[in-house]
Amino acid sequence: MATWGYGNDNGPATWVKSFPVAAGTRQSPIDIVPTAAKCDTKLTENPLTVNYSPEPAMELCNPGLSVKANIKSKSVIKGGPLEGEYKLEQFHLHWGSADKQGSEHTLNGKMFPAELHLVHYNATKYSSFGEAVDKPDGLAVFGIFLKISDKPHQGLKSLTDVLSEVQYKDKSINIKQEYNPVCLLPDNINKYWTYLGSLTTPPLCESVTWIVFEEPIEVSEDQMKAFRALCCGECGSAPIVDNYRPPLPLGNRQLRASFQ
Ligand SMILES: NS(=O)(=O)/N=C1/NCCS1
Ligand SMILES: [Zn+2]
Image (cartoon, rainbow, N blue to C red; front, side, top):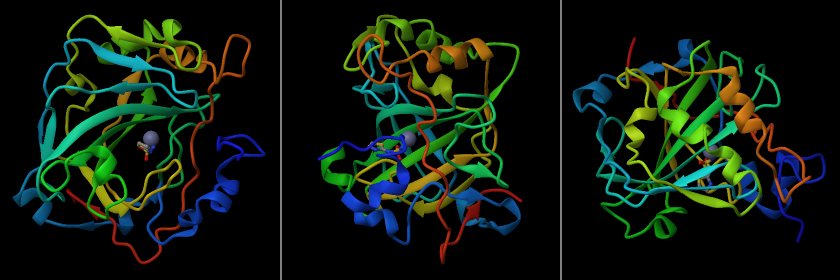
């Protein structure tokens, strides 16, 4: 079975062959049109709460189509659109070959150079990510847009400074310094859009409550170049770039906003 990817022969348009849910009614990402979002005060009555903990030796790996950090500590979120407590499992990114593209969600049709995903599972109802991954209320993913600035993002710098050590597929290292993923969040986490969607990579399970923050985090061009130097395979293989799925129709779904 050909493995899925982002090329012409195995990219997003081909995924439906092996993963029919790709043609489902709650797929992600979507184009976020703020004027079409319904401001829902219930989201602010029960504010989104983040309780992340430091990771003593966070594992950073190159699974071949992104770069991923696996979380072991108890880092949890609740509130906002969520019922129960969701536990951080991992985070990873999607990025472009150039600054004009790279994000999965778009904002009024505009792509950002990259998008950071912090993936949580419903630890109140399920005992593991694997059990939660295909349940309609199983997952909650933070989507954070990255934009270019002349200063590097300090929180991401601990990672971008060592990406060369996970340049090739299946390489992994431990970030020695204690690392608290809270450093990756934008300053204002009270302004977000939320909707019911899916994983944006196979198996594309329709199990994600998406929370996409309005405020991007700012990274430097050098940090973007570090992501673009990661390789899909061993030495000499193609760079990991344009690992994003284009937006799918919102359909009958309601996009809600936590702000006016
Ligand atoms: N990009 S994403 O976060 O929606 N997709 C995932 N697939 C497996 C774990 S997270
Ligand atoms: Zn993702």
